[in-house]
Image: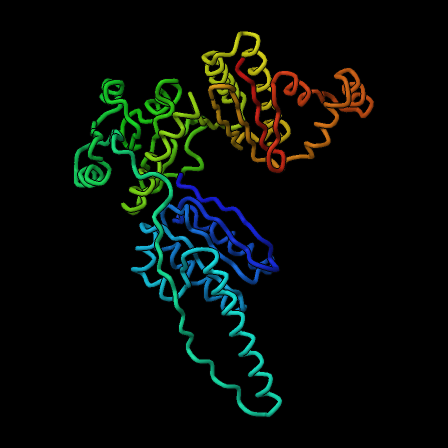
Length: 433
């Protein structure tokens, strides 16, 4: 799925800068609105959106910016956008957003602009106060003449590698494939189109693609995707999957090995271009850092849990870990999944458990995430440090509770145990000796 992320810098009583990255489209617009609502709820008075790492914005996102800018103006909140990439800025400019919302070059220009806006507001407020005292009508506010910098900065990341190889797996060659080829076929690279999963597998090693664009309509598309991602030699190939209109992504299957990103029809061609090109830029970096990457998700049901454990064990056995280390990491994974099912989901078999397996040159890690409310993991990690397993079990027994050694087991089986966020995400790390 095309994703959107953000990071807030600054404080609400001064300048709040929000660094955005990813895609602002139909799939992420709700999250984008949540971000802006959060800033309004916290009472932010000066807001800078940094778009430097935004890959794409569609018409819905632009319309949202129009609406929120108006709301911010009514509340006396200063609001500007900075460092807009050229490919994103062109769309914003064509729809007239840059004529309304200040779009500036960098943070320094933004602060100068906001300072000037504050100064004008103070002058106007003083004039209205004087007018009220003199029982005279307040002077009309003159239309503001802003000096905006329409600076659509070129990104600092490298352009699409010239030798990129793209493989499209679609039912037939048509205008859509021709357009994609014209856009993604680099001078020193290759672009291939095949019409079945079996043909793609047959030619896969010879083509050695950096990017796969796979239509879900292809027969056995899920089985093909799973084979590509589980195989160590091909798991780092980026896969963008295209789903037909009406696909319920949230309830696809009881067990799924995920593509890197996806789009659901209808989508805009520019959105697919931006997504594909971002993936082509990312793949070389991932190949330098990782040896394998597998993202899988399954319902919290006994049969699916067993399948996940078998998959994890098969992946772990292919790592450089020795048999004893592999067994320990597998035990930690089983415990993490069991905790996600029993404690995170409280036995609800319709909820999903999400896992990411990563093999790097110096370590193997597995992240397990459930949909629960989390827990006070810091308290239990302290107990692991200060209590023996026997003492921990005794305390649980005295409290009339069973178990209680799960975190301690995971800690003993890994070189590093991390809980993230609210505690519903655990990362198991085993170093490669």
